[in-house]
Length: 297
Image (cartoon, rainbow, N blue to C red; front, side, top):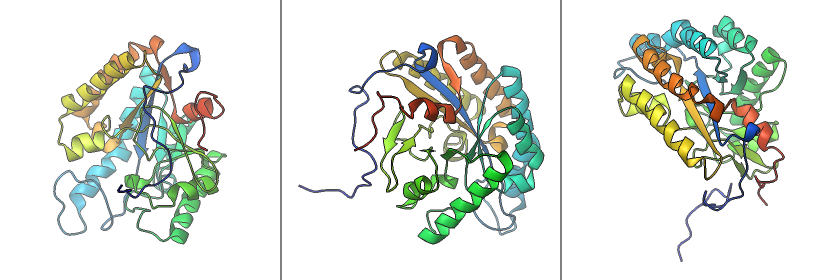
């Protein structure tokens, strides 16, 4: 029998055959917003494109992305405040140098800061183990110094992992990762240094694949969020589920997209008495010692 290469980070498990439990307050669906605050190198490196980039410096795409930090994120902050929505802020560490006021504005309202590398101009998956360890250490130190506590969670820029990324994260104290999108429930993963929790982070209810890759319109992306929410709320009568919403201010912070995002979030908030609106770190805290969420052997 053929044996395919495997990661051996977790075992197969059907979602219909697992222990049952409730989220806090007897809720069945946990909903969190993952807001990506990212900064990019000028004239080099990676970055999403509004239009096919020309020779560097690619001013069009650089400036389009920078709109997110200068305008879009502030509009989204106002939206979250108005709707009393918490956020998990997935932050490149260079944001503290580039836009400290923006980082402070989210920190002041009590939002969680999640590690998201140094910059989205680079991938950690192409680095040597020593260089990847140094990248994680540098980003973690900046967040720890700025926030007065170490981040619990990590999302790799471009969700790019090397074969040892989970081991390196756990080695320096990370307790959960958002890199793996294989489930609608949190799943404990094996690492060389003990279990690491994979919390669902979406690739469908996510504006990058939707808007940049599939070229979905603003209304279509809002409908994706609404339909995902409605379906998962129904499904959660059978199993407790996690719905993440992945957002980037240079995309959904654009005025016409923000209007449709507001529509989707209003739809979700109309059912807030039935759901647990939370942050990814709080999901980890709940799962950390819950007997119905078994750790790997």
